Length: 377
Ligand SMILES: Cc1cc2nc3c(=O)[nH]c(=O)nc-3n(C[C@H](O)[C@H](O)[C@H](O)COP(=O)(O)OP(=O)(O)OC[C@H]3O[C@@H](n4cnc5c(N)ncnc54)[C@H](O)[C@@H]3O)c2cc1C
Image (cartoon, helix red, strand yellow):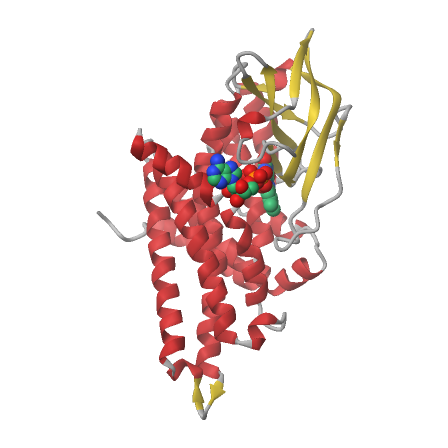
């Protein structure tokens, strides 16, 4: 078992760390405070090949594999979490089209996603009454000549409304239930997006509802075979969950760095607070939790790159890293005391940004269901 990154992975880490710290971190407070979509950051990611990391160069991708991609995503999340979520969904959509799309669909969408020329990608599974129980969706698609007519709505869709392509999951048969996946393009008649949600964190990322009102989708835009949608969605989420773990680690690591520097600098009772064991233990526990989370991410990503099953490992990585990331950010605020609670320091933003990682792409409770089912089967 090797615990070292290879030359290529180290290069990705160095390049993206430098980009995130020099270019993304300085603007992250404004992105958050004014809820600005980080368009310039996304353009820079595209220029460096970081929006098509999970598909081949023949389609404009950079073929970094799950390890390379997760290393990059962690660094971006440390600089600007709103940028990281846009990057994550775009990469997930690109990989899913590459994996399940036909040649014509790959050529039509992948180069534009990687270069951002068509905009980011979006993935629409959740509905107002179907969140954790995603299979209980109501959005319905009926065959009509050479089209499917979609009716229904989706909620909480990242990049929705500004995406160049949205993977939309819809029922195509009610008894027995069959779900299919569609590639929906902007400007399609009957397809509209609501206003961005006002969120606790990730304020630079657009999260919107999507509506489908007699929306005609050409049959050539079905992704995979009829009825294959749920399998496609679960496959996308398997990979996506490793990414959420990386986001949580990146955000929490940034908070821990701030807390460590602050503890050395801040004096109370005539000495730096870093001299107090209570502070030292918070820092030590945080570093240990983040390292453990990182190892779970590396294991899941390695298995994925080797083409081995990794559903259980990705679920464990997501569950542990997101919960640990929340604990670490919570402690970072504690280390900074009152200064941790105000926006002069970034840790209050990190705490708000990391909060959602135990919720999206399957809550912690859902991960525990996935894991216990695999144990008790
Ligand atoms: C910022 C943001 C971005 C998002 N982006 C996307 C996106 O791009 N695409 C997309 O499709 N979705 C997206 N989502 C939706 C997200 O995936 C859902 O919010 C999530 O899956 C939870 O669904 P829900 O909100 O309906 O909660 P619910 O399913 O209603 O859950 C509420 C609570 O009940 C618990 N619960 C539910 N069922 C069980 C059970 N069987 N056992 C125990 N506890 C249970 C949950 O764990 C949770 O604590 C996003 C959400 C947010 C907040």
